[in-house]
Length: 195
Image (cartoon, rainbow, N blue to C red; front, side, top):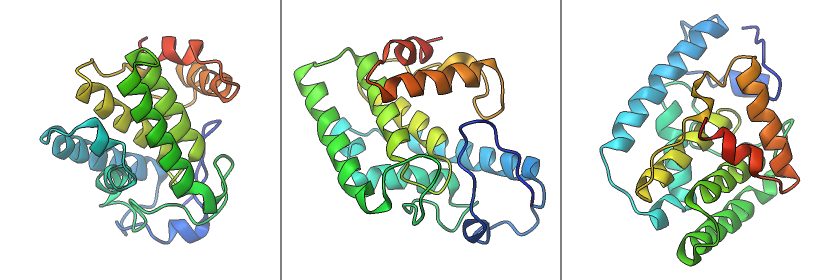
């Protein structure tokens, strides 16, 4: 299968590609469609259960969300990556950095350090930056951020109201806002998540 990745996307390694569950898929468009169906099923399951922010902000729940999103697509669904990517912390730091993030977000919520939108934007950005999984990190980080927002009684983010997977102006704004956040400048990302 040949992949054509948009800028900023994480390529799937050959050793990860062998873990594709549906054997009938031969085109990237088929994979994209299959993954989207898998994600929509996960959203139904996740929407059916109320969760508290301490539950959401746990390593186990973060893995569970990714597993549900990709369990019918990849054998590595819900498992942290084993190789270095074009983005992300060293694989040996994934658990530790995720725990720090979860502890930080709990503190921000309990002490009202930031607005709800800024807390959500910061949580999303750091999850993407850690890059826990072989693939699907952006989609996972957006979904779990929406779960956190809903749990806080706030409306979910609109994420630019467009498809963020394909190359285009909206994706470029999103990637640019994430890069600014890498420098601790969150204004563009906070604005983007509500456009």
